[in-house]
Length: 335
Length: 260
Image (cartoon, rainbow over all chains, first blue to last red; front, side):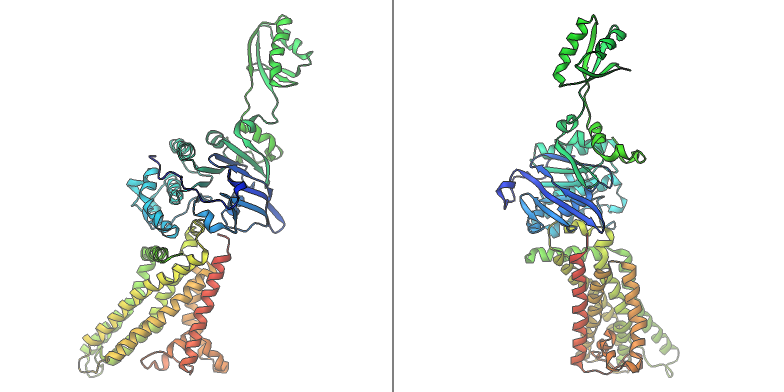
């Protein structure tokens, strides 16, 4: 995937200066379908110029939230601002600089890729038509742009969907499960393209996914949503660590002696043998690891390894979502 | 929305219809083939027995051709085009991608109508040209239509197919289902309308039947195959306006309010 289409330099003026640093802001956003509440009081804060992951299991309310942000369906309650504009009140102005793929990208199958982009460019305005060729080049579809879309693979359709987003020269891209159908090479290219859009072009990418690995590798920050509610949100590193136990892997020359010393220490909540050595759960902050080391040395244990356990977003995700409560549906979350 | 964007949107909708090969083949078959068959059969009959069968063309041939095109097959072609225009984006799943551009839904609906009319008229006017070709080529010793009748015939072709096409765009946008819209409109046009028009106990209520109102603008005598109801041209015009306005309003309302 090659050079950028346009630098996202021209800002859509925000009607609310307090929202200048946020690409998306929602307060109490709610959507009800009859008795069922699909989105329940969601408060989202998506910083501008970042890749933001919207992470949750299938059916958590991710797509419904996106559909409300884009005016595809009405909110039952709550407020939304996109690029500083209240929506749906200023939806028309706002969406001029928003590109979105909602669920899987759909096209007129009997038209070529280029013709499909022409259709959307006609609706967006004259400038969009000039972006068709660069957008196709950007996603690597120039050579097959004149073939009918019905002959495209799922991966090519995803790329064409991204090209369609780029017609808006978007300040904000909203991508719903964008790597569905991409092969590993395509996923890697897609990650690089998203990072380039954020880091080199200053665009904001709001990426909805149930793929933890994808969000962890692409995004700077994320919100975890479950059963229509935001469970937690923040930078990826903080999300992964937040609320997690501080653990160490200890390698010792005398495991029995080490276990005995650790089990009587106030610094340690739990110590057990593991494949890697001894797994130690600290009672306090990670900084107490040094004190644990000193204690073991004083007890006559030769410490060969002392390594903090790094928590993944996946672990955090499983802790905070209902997955732990619903083990009968584990296949819905793929790391 | 300025004129440039309106023109671009019209072009995009025209492209979508023009490239819909399956629909276009059926539309061409419906609008052209019956006229060709009509004049071919009549010409063969005349050549085989000139005493029994009059020449295929002339004013009688024009009348038959116009009836066939404007009251039967032309409206069917118009239904197919109108339904395709009304449901194409939604059935392909592309409507939501057009909505997320921020363009108003009414503008999206509005651009369908002129595009559908442009495709519909380009096909049915070709059909009318075939009627004229048969009329003059096979006239032999029969009188031929004068310029006024030719122009009135063109106007009638545009009116009948145009009105049905616009009603079909509105109805299809309302239902958002291509099979349902085609079935309902063709059933109405071919079965329900003639049936209702022949139920004399319905009295003046039959004025509201679209095909009956259209027939009253025919420049040629329709005979017993068409008009069952008498009404003034003013009433006929009101009925046509009401049908067009009602279905445009319903289609626009549905396009504006539905979840995309």
